[in-house]
Amino acid sequence: MINYIKKTYRGNKESFFKVLENNLVNNNKMFIVTANPETFMKADSISEFDKALMKPDTTIVPDGIGVVKAANYIGITEINERITGVDISYKLLELANKYSKSIYLLGASKDVIELTVKNINKEYPKVNILGYSDGYVDNKDDIFKRIKNISPDIVLVALGVPKQELLIAKHYDSFSKGIFVGVGGTFDVISGTKKRAPQIIQKLNIEWLYRIIGNKERIKRFYDSNVKFIFKLRKLAKEEK
Ligand code: UDP
Image 1 (cartoon, rainbow, N blue to C red):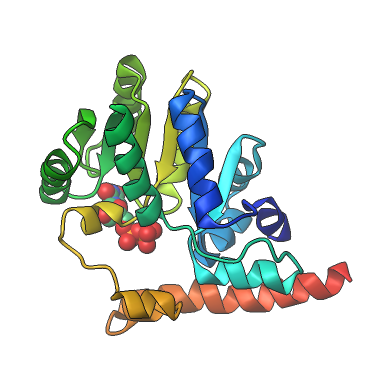
Image 2: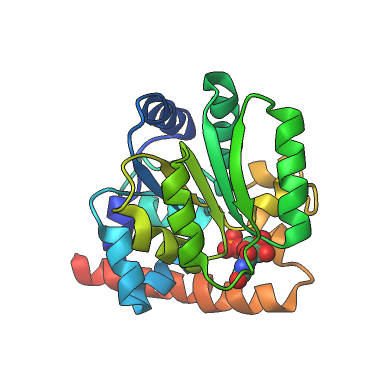
């Protein structure tokens, strides 16, 4: 658990976006995991997921405020703001539009992915969408084989944690280029199906609260991951001292 936090990208959003731009322009391969406490709790209990996170060429970024706070708690001060899957996706679309790069989109329901493609075509006309698929098809390995043949510059996978990361990790080594990101509920936002929390809520770092209010399943997920995460972190940090 502490290993994941120590491995998390140290810097702010602006500096990370420079890394993204540099890698996209130079065709450097990249695998980005946008992490929140739930990500780390799951990785702790699924060894394949743990391996994917700890691989040297996997970049973990702090998607959730819980990861920023946890880093600060163990004395890492360079991690000081969230870098979310939604932010990374919009940045990559902006950069792909600027440099006429290509993209493949996998995940979400059929309606959502189709609306996502439509909105990208409208807002980012120079982005070359090489293909897309909803996230409920059976054989996603076949889809990845197809993606490998068309070799896009960017691959966004929205299947939820850890499905999206495990799928990327399984195929990553067979690619020679591409920026791969597990982006969770991002297509729901790009498609306009779900709204992100208002700016003020994002600024106050309580977007998590906005997402769980009135959603029983998310409240349970919050307890199972975030609350247990805090206790576990405190225990491990004490043991390290
Ligand atoms: N999803 C999918 N296939 C699945 C399960 C989930 O395409 O088998 C999609 C789902 O439609 C949603 C996204 O994955 O668009 C995950 O959203 P969620 O908000 O649960 O992700 P989180 O960011 O919380 O991990």
